[in-house]
Image (cartoon, rainbow, N blue to C red; front, side, top):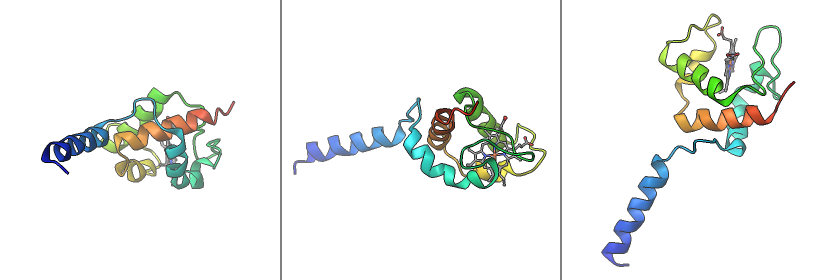
Length: 105
Ligand code: HEC
């Protein structure tokens, strides 16, 4: 393999890794959501202790998670900060796409 081809490949990989898919990948979000179902329900409908997150607007969904992560958003229950702390921007976008797709009227 030529050096030039190697360099081109490395650049492609770096670009791919650095890009956040703005719309979010609902299929990947569904895998990540395994952690969320215990409280919010597999269908995201929530219960008396946990808010419904199915059908939530993507922008508010991501903003909520970013707020918990940064500590800007008050989390009365103390539940969300730990979960949000491990999520990347891409994770949040993917989760938002997944829960949005669940609808939940
Ligand atoms: C241990 C229980 C628990 C788990 C697990 C959990 N949550 Fe939550 N979540 C809560 C509670 C309780 C709240 C309300 C917190 C508050 O007081 O603001 C909340 C709030 C939220 C909100 C804001 C809802 C709104 O109406 O603004 C979003 C979005 C959210 N969770 C997403 C997630 C995602 C995504 C996951 C999985 C990565 C997750 N949660 C895992 C308990 C949980």
